[in-house]
Image 1 (cartoon, rainbow, N blue to C red):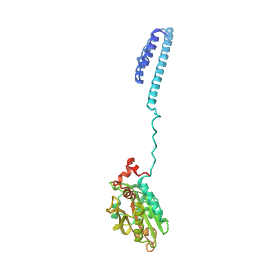
Image 2: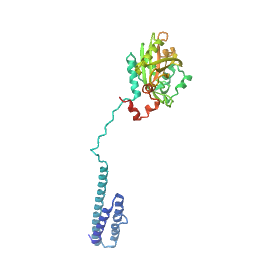
Image 3: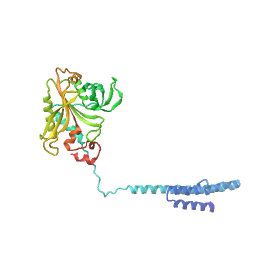
Image 4: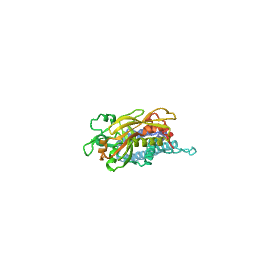
Length: 340
């Protein structure tokens, strides 16, 4: 290799070593191996030599090129190794630091209420029914004495699904769990004692309403179940749920299409921070004869009661929460206070 070529190799080596990053290295490479680089210019000059000289000089230039490429690849690898070492150094774990504990999971307060309601009613012989959250129009409305265009439907404005069931009926996200009363009653013979807890959906959103919320519906059908049974069962449930006898329950006349007579159930604590305030807690009533008939039963023989309560409302009262939306915002600072 001629002195000129050896000098180029030495210069390239120095330039590559001086490159502090990949971009600088590629710039240095272009100076020697690029289209306008020093070795490229030497290769162009071979055309002026005779055949023997061209062979000899070409071999020397190729040897110099291979040396420079080897130096280039070595520097590329060195830069890559340095970058990796720097990244690994930044990710080093200090084993002397205290460990990070894994937080224990806890049951959501609304689900805790759900479980508590199931346990209380299970203790007095009620079954638990579960069913689809996408219902057809007949089960959600018509079977419950809410015929098409009935004004009471506007009280439960909801989310419809852009399809129909096998019978051509519109599908919607259920507005209450009462459809499970229909489904359960049509599959079982009296006496029927069942609660149906689950998620429901309506077009509501404020401090006391959510587009998605939880509800528990109760149903007791037999040959001689009266409004007095409703009062006794629900009053006992409330005292068990809140673990106190220091509350009053009243049944206020109201209207629901699926019950007659119908009542709003209010409660009032006689002690504690909510003492003296009547709070609406549930809707209830004697099951309407048309609904009993839609259960597939004879309303002249069978009678009973039904009720519906919001699980969020029960949870808010039990724990003293004033904004329902906090249950669904996922703030662990809020939820952690309910962990047991």
